[in-house]
Image (cartoon, rainbow, N blue to C red; front, side, top):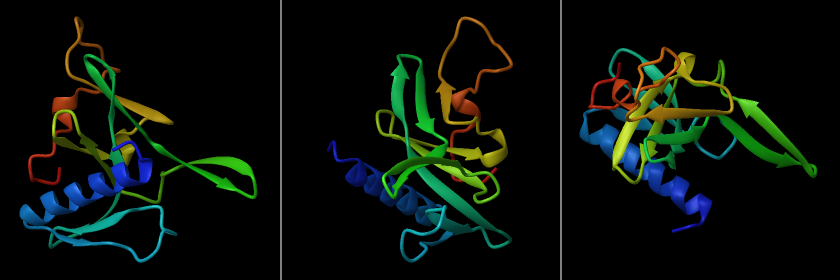
Length: 137
């Protein structure tokens, strides 16, 4: 499945199914005009979620976009999700794993999640720190 829209739809469907199975109420905004893909209700709070599909960057990392890319009137535009979402939920299709990344933890443009490294550097975003285990952090 190499069609980007189909890949995104599959990611969103798997995220919705997982959240519902974990007991959350999930709402999908009507149309494609909102910066968030889902609204997740944990009974106390609503979370605006942007769904992303990761790709393997290197053997020990995956990467995902932390900005939107659009073309309007023939011009290319990039926009961050600051102040319009609460978190990313990222699907790693190769590992069949979801990651919950709060918007405040996200880096600009692209973010890498690392599985292993020979050193433990403060700038490393460890994948295990963001694994979604059914509990919203």
